Amino acid sequence: KNQVEQSPQSLIILEGKNCTLQCNYTVSPFSNLRWYKQDTGRGPVSLTIMTFSENTKSNGRYTATLDADTKQSSLHITASQLSDSASYICVVRGPSGGSYIPTFGRGTSLIVHP
Amino acid sequence: NAGVTQTPKFQVLKTGQSMTLQCAQDMNHEYMSWYRQDPGMGLRLIHYSVGAGITDQGEVPNGYNVSRSTTEDFPLRLLSAAPSQTSVYFCASSYFAEGANYGYTFGSGTRLTVV
Image (cartoon, rainbow over all chains, first blue to last red; front, side):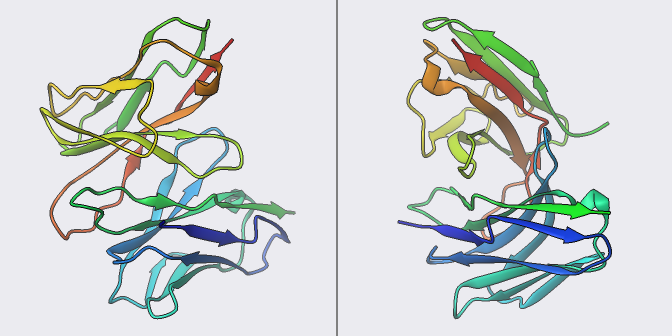
């Protein structure tokens, strides 16, 4: 069964600090991996999308890395801001019998304190 | 503003009632889908569609029906609401092409409570 495991489950950091969120997956074959940010009470918003051939992708202060050999991805947030407080969701897509059903991680809840 | 619009934002139903959650997008996306999000769990796919007239089941389809008569609209119908269907429902859309990688645009969600 395809699985996406994220760690840590929750994280508290001080404003201005860096942090790294982890995503391990078992989806195979693998098509692409996405990171989403979900603010409380809102729908997820896409941060990065990477295919199996890409190692890193940046979006402002967010940098995602991918190691397709070990099936691991990380999301690094630089110089955190209060607005970074949210849930970060890793989503892995692999073709499944001709359909396109992605597998969602449970998310990492990040709280940035002033 | 372009995007995915979901209505209603909040809904309370009695067990056994039926209702339709509405989803509309104005980005001409071929792919549309419905997810439910429960505490401590990842988003789970209910139904999806890769174009008008085409729908398919996701991970948790039981108790839900969908149809796709136009590119823009993808309503989700609860046939006979049960307390287990208490959840937050998200509609998402994207462009669709074999082998291509497009991010989803999510709606703001519908918070449904079944009592």
